[in-house]
Length: 378
Length: 262
Image 1 (cartoon, rainbow over the protein chains, first blue to last red):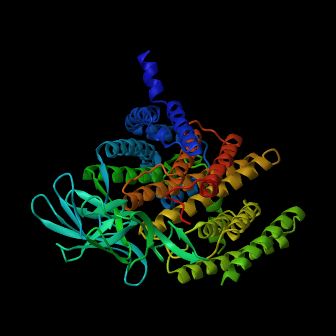
Image 2 (tube, rainbow over the protein chains, first blue to last red):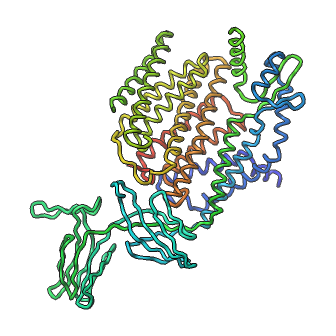
Image 3 (cartoon, rainbow over the protein chains, first blue to last red):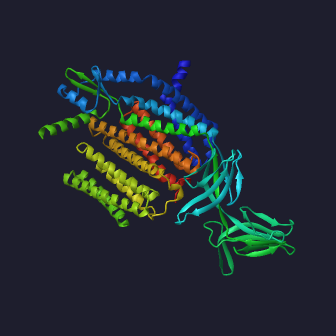
């Protein structure tokens, strides 16, 4: 019974069933737009079973490498001669065969191909599982000249953010400085495709948005303080009169006395929608950058909207990364060996040379003989 | 220079007609003319793609049009390479490869052709490897499907040796395509980690590339371990190519995701 179960778990049939089920679930998930399937227990269970299948199959393949070579030699011994004896040694030499007794071999590294490919697949699934379990990400929004503290105590400060570089090309670049928990100061730039490494974190440039920028002055504080607002907020000294900022509009146009607005696209002709709350009641109004109003003892000075970055902060053990890269490299090597280093064996018989291996050997022999004939006719 | 694109499209069409005529009337002269015309189409096509790359200051692989036209060029080049390697035995390759290149070029012609600035997410060292290997992989699968289609058409009318050659050629093309598709997926994973912070996001394009990879993995296992040959393999190669087409056209048209670069 155990033997039967083990036989099924390591069988190719089981592997193919699992792969088919994974493919079917992927089709269903994309067709239904249901991404929860990828996190469901049954989807993860399929990968767990595939790992078991790959583990048994890789181990067994590792043990059967010598057997495969022997079997190939046996097939060459039993095969019929395809080249006359006089051409045998030249063929073996031209095609870099290595003679071992009465059988010659070529591309024996190809035997390793299936083992490497399956082992790499197993390693890949394990690395993906480790990354899934151990990587932690956090999305954050930071306004220029503001800082935030990360879970390990690292303080991140956004010096500036720009959408375009000095040549006018879009580059979404955040300049950051950081103070690590051990007191080390570090920093640099993060752009799309070039995350910044800060201590144990990697900081990715993910997104950007526009925020209202309003200057505030009071009698007590004559120096203007700039605030950035990404969400609606009521700005007031006494909690009763002040300005309620609700949203930002772009592409504001006035046509036939009517104001047309948009909330999408670039920030061209922006305007802020606000409510002035004072003794006269609430009045909704559209104000443009440059407008200055006094309400409830505060001077509100509306500036051009400011652009800010959306960043992703990630921690992930470095070894998971290298494990994944190793699995990629091993799989590509394995596939190359499988497809392009097909083992061949040749047996020198009294009546000629038999060759076993690639399926196009007869074509290659035809070509080889054509070349020989052309060579001798020259 | 867009006129070169139109010229190459028209010359592919002419080569297709000559291929069909040469085969239908069994005229060697017409077949030779078809080959010559195909070479002219490929030359015009290469000049156009090089010009586009120079004009755009980047590899011309950044949108559906550029990928489709590169796909067509790869199919045409693969056809010519295989034809010259097996000239005496695989003359028919031209009759299948040339119309395929023409169809792909026609699909490209329907796409917007403006040269656009590369968006920041695409400005990466992985860009060429990821998309270039996708073009190679798709063209290998396309030709494998074309060879398999011919296998199914002539199965009952041709000798065993010829069928074995077609069956083997289709397998070799699929094994090359599979290796390239693996490079596409792995380079995409590494790139995605740099750009989006995750190796895999189950984006529709990624998911369909995985589905295609799985189906071709099943093809290879059936062939290498269960020793399936001939008709079954030819059918599977054709069906699998439908998935490639869906990943290429269907996903971009019907689904939106991180790969929707418009």
